[in-house]
Length: 507
Image (tube, rainbow, N blue to C red; front, side):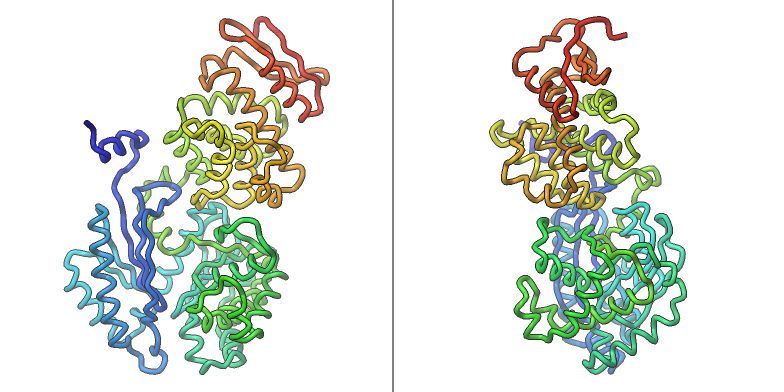
């Protein structure tokens, strides 16, 4: 009998690295362990644990890491090392940031950690290295990121200029939420002046005008959570959440003026963030003023994902993260690995003159179109919808999630008024929703014709002619019964065409 490990290994895509990698982000405010499932274009975190230790508290006044915080950090790192080994991670590294690199006793502390965990690679990142890794983490999920990156931690704020997916300039400032609060003596007015003065020296911020501002870091993500709660956003996923500059500005004003009691009344706000949020809001408001971006994009992908991104071979780094995720999902869950490519060609006639982004989404939908084949037939539409809408891939923005989820629901014949479709409909405009539904109907028809096999699909062809949607059939197995005719009619109606079925030579 095969062991579970043997079954899992056999299920891996050909050539896929099966080793697990673990990284510890030793920050000024928190320490976090992430264990990644191998090398993949879309990082898959199998385990993610954070401990809020506030290692950087007091550095502004004492210049040193506190004894209690150091002792607790050693305890937490010992646990993280044990977790990584138990999970079979072949790589375990520790990355230390602002608090350790700036503390007078930072080198001695790292020497103690090295003695406690012999053989474990430990790196104290410079400010430029920290900014670069954060930028690469953003680019991992948004390959053509263009604008300004701002990554806030407890001890520092890292800034980078991103131009078409490349970091062109970096800066690190002593504006982390813990450091800023200490420097300002807890006074937000004083903090505002400190931020304004520090940002004057970052010339590249002016290149953010009209582009995007990408925000990384727990304090910024907490601000996004507040905004999502305020507007009743239909998708509880922070990564790729975006707001207009004006909305972000209003949010920062509210958070910096509402007071602690006001923040406590906001649902979902962590008590651990109550003291940090006003200072994060002050930093963001000043960055918005300096950079003048068109919108703000929140990223859950940062330094740790940047570290993993560096481990990838160059060909893998060059892949489209959305399509890479769709292909990997298809390899794990679909019946025939060759069917998606056949579907891409088969559906092309329905969408002449499609833009590059529209084609990208259509290709991804074709890869995902059979990933519910092992689900219960009564729940394939709902499960397929949820699998796509809530998937953890960092290369999928909210529009793509909604489009693909609605399309896959249609592929499994979900009723158009099914309540579970509501989040996707709220995230899409009418044209995008209509296109997703049309593609879903086409895929529904394709699987009924072909049983999900390229061989049978090759005996059919769709094309548009003289205001009609024509389905041509040829050879054995090309039978169209009443159910198939209904699917053909539904697809034609969605396109505003009449349906016609023809037999004959398709050459």
